[in-house]
Length: 457
Image 1 (cartoon, one colour):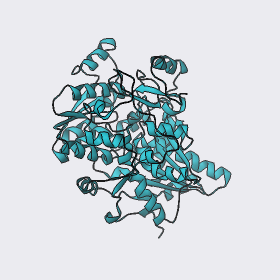
Image 2 (tube, rainbow, N blue to C red):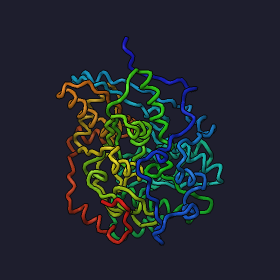
Image 3 (cartoon, helix red, strand yellow):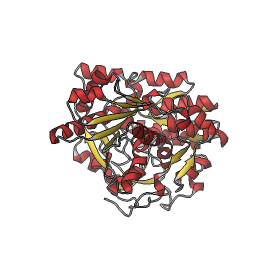
Image 4 (cartoon, rainbow, N blue to C red):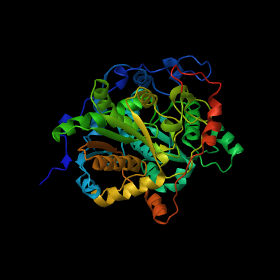
């Protein structure tokens, strides 16, 4: 019988995270203080994050030890399995070999607990009593809710309003783990009230929800803020995905020619890609593809610039590909990919030619998700369908060229609480959402008076 599943024994789970900032061809540009425009110091970030996570955010150490308490929680679902997608290969008639890393096996159903557990732990030992955060599709909010429950920390989640309404079961997951979930923009913060005053029917955005969560953190005693993507320490925690995958590809006697991940803020993509990106930096011929929605094309149509991570301009200025902090994306069903900015690490890797960005349209992603479900059995989260769509494209390209390629993608989470999205697709209520250039241009005007990074595009 052909081997289709590669399982690492628990004793081989990585004990260190990998930090690609130690090996990047071009050094990262620093975050800037929103008031002074000067590089942020650790003390500047202290009102928002605990110092132990700030140290990781600014670290250039190649390897960072994973605490035993975090490993203990990881062991609930890690190491996660690697699968050979032979059913999909046959359905496509491709000579390509397709592998996927299954991050949907976590209790929260996605890759997000890899950093949520770590952030909850570091906050716990720093004395934090309450964590505030935002969430789009709800994968991050549910993962942090679970992790806060593990470590006895109160959790408050501001969920983008359109996703709050589209995905009620994500909210119920958060509440089951003891969190308080609020639709954003809300009347609970000054940021939310100011947004609603201008647009009472605002569908919300991750930038708006971040503003609310940061405000709630800095105005509440013993409270810190946690972010589920974009920041350096998040990418570091997620590297466990790729570190495991390297070992599992060796078990399969194979190595990927192409690596693919969905990209919203960058966490699941970077988690798989970064350890392999080190091989590319050292001369290995790998095509590493970050896939985003065509209706929120941060990497493919946004400039590399300094921009705020939130709508109300409370966060530091980050060097990243961005559509502008006031950009409000269309209410597509890939809620977790609806963010105006991209991880500075991923953005820099794109500038350096290590990562290739691509975008796909909404209907194509659902068609890909159905093909995957009907050939492999797994129902994917709408976000994950973007990686599947690009995998199918590359597999069919290999077929046309008659080449035997090896493709590895990150299956970042299941879609079992996203079935309303599939129902909308089946009923013909979804469509592709083309983003006019003038909408992007209007949002980018807000960047004109901000500092410019050295490599501004």
